[in-house]
Image (tube, rainbow, N blue to C red; front, side, top):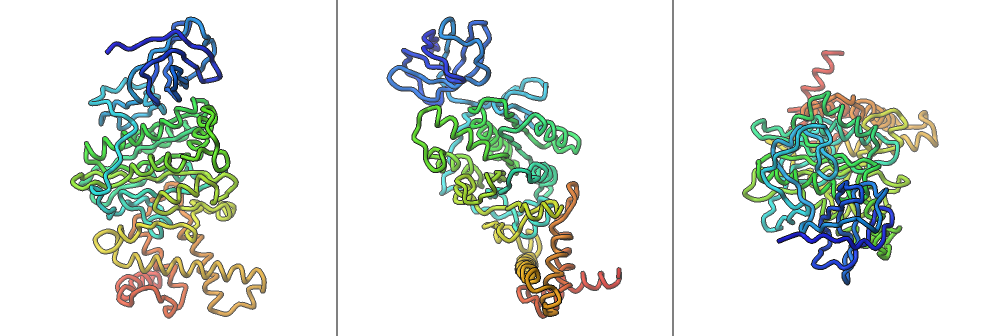
Amino acid sequence: MALKEYETVRNVEGPLIFVEGVEGVGYGEMVEVTMPSGEKVKGQVLETSKGMAVVQIFGDTTGLGTKSTRVRFLGETARLGVSDEMLGRVFSGLGEPRDKGPAIVAKEKVEIIGMAINPYTRRPPAEFIQTGISTIDGMNTLVRGQKLPIFSAAGLPHNEMAVQIARQAKVLKEEEAFAVVFAAMGITHEEAQFFIKDFERTGALERAVLFLNLADDPSMERLIAPRMALTMAEYLAFEEDMQVLVILTDMTNYCEALREIASARGEVPGRRGYPGYMYTDLSSIYERAGCIQGKKGTITQLPILSMPGDDITHPIPDLTGYITEGQIVISRELHRKGIYPPVDVLPSLSRLMNSGLGAGKTREDHRGVADQLYASYAEGRDVRNLAAVVGVEALTESDKKYLQFADEYEKRFVTQGRYENRDIEQTLDLGWELLSILPESELKRIKLDHIEKYGRPVWEKMKQQA
């Protein structure tokens, strides 16, 4: 079917052009606009009704006028040409090479909207993904097929955590291929260079695909970038049988773009100005994670968002929490203490943790050690608040032990280097070392046989080294 071309641009408002007299044009349809200079730019239909189409231009509209501007509607929504040759490459938010490498010869072109996974065909997530970060692996275990967001805030090191997880993450079964799809929305040029250089320098780029949307790129591209990344992830997982970890940063920039586009379309704003359908829109991204019966590959998501004003009740983290299976919370208080990564395990939660730990997955003492560390740290934090009021001298001997435990826990368990990759055995053994601070009678959440099998050997080794 011949594609229709129109020269009926009625108005240009910023990145939006209004085209009259159109027929058979659909919402989300891709557009090619030829400017008076002959330069061609891409766009997408934002709205269409009664012969009028509103088109968002991907790029600069300087010099674009109502005369001599030709608009061609391409008759299809946004697609991504996928291939396993995309591993090791860097792309824009529209899927175009950003690394000056050759164009990709696609095996097929796939719509970026994706297909919802039939709930009947989903299988429960049940395998451990090791990130090398103790506060995640030990306390809030990430499981294949899970969507586990990281709640951060402005000025906190979520970008550093993102590249560290991308660099270190792996599945423990070596025969299974593992890949990382990394999408960044609304980032600065400096942040883009940081991501690219870190991936290249550490060799992590070889098993990764990067989609980078910069702050000066069009807002509409920010809405497309995560869907491009997830389309690539679905190809690697369900066609190439790979275990895929998708890292999306920063979902707050995505939601701001969503609000901006909704305002441009004249929609009635909802809570704090965000569109009322933001919950549904975020679901269309997060729900593309999972495991499918009969497919070896899986998609796991780690979306990162910076909470405006450090407010965890803000619509973006609030709605994200409803859709996903837990959260990793980055603490400004720990960051001020110089602790990296500043993960606060008390408000953090992985709802699928129990599915990914235990004998044959991590270690049989994992659940008990995690529970005991959590309870003891919570007690130690309470004692710390009490000591600020009555003074350390007024504390009981038991309280002083818990206070010491909380300090050592932050200093040794939470704190680790940006290039320190701890395996799950190291994390659990470190947990046992910290629990030696407390009387054995206080270890009420761990089975006695696990204390004998795992705790005592660690404690004996500590005595010999001392």
